[in-house]
Length: 294
Image 1 (cartoon, rainbow, N blue to C red):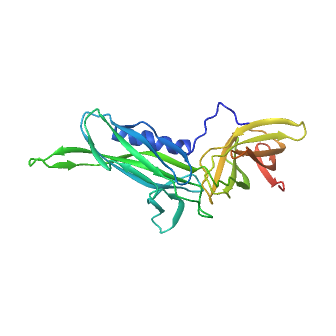
Image 2: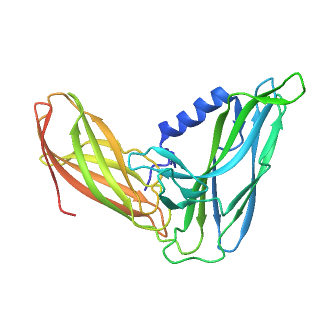
Image 3: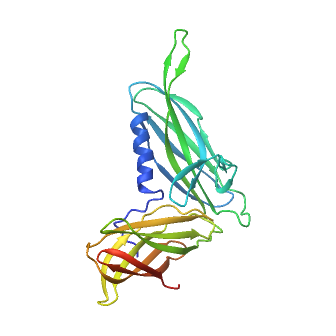
């Protein structure tokens, strides 16, 4: 079972922190929620709200919009158009949130040290289309600009800043949760450190939030030498993503060891993926690695 003391993050921790902390620090906006997770049945509608607070002593002109989200295999976050389109012309159906999500108001001036409430309406498709994703991933963007008046009383807008609420939609029917553990690798990262990485592929139709750890065993003594946790992050349908972990070991480590990669994700029942790798160390340096079949 997954440790209860660990927090499941749907976006890479460092990435989310940089997006939220850096942008809030500059824009001085506060959000009542940085992530909305919504489960709804096909053909139904739901509403929720997000409160945006102006934490400064001057008014802010705030515009709201909806966009899709794409996560690359390395965990980088890219914004898509509301219909899931990227700048290079690709279409990512799981990022097509625009037809389902409406936000009001689209723009508002928030006075100094005040708040405004935005209403988000989410309308699920009437029925499931075979092969379509059973959920969507996107973001609600709130772009703030300082405002002032010129001599004629017209509003002037200066540089703008953005904060986001991540939106994860999940349709309650027709979900197929499945992932495959494709590859594992071990790399030397300077003396005294190894980097373990695993490539996961989402072969289902709804986003997953897998969590994993590596058990490093000494086959001779049958002892567990170390347990390390792999990075976390959302895995989108039809996509691959690399999860990694660093292990700092005794610098003169020698011998043959087994690294057992364990990934778990939730569905109708908890599913675990396992792949084992044998690696050899000599005087603190990685010499060889062999992945066991299966």
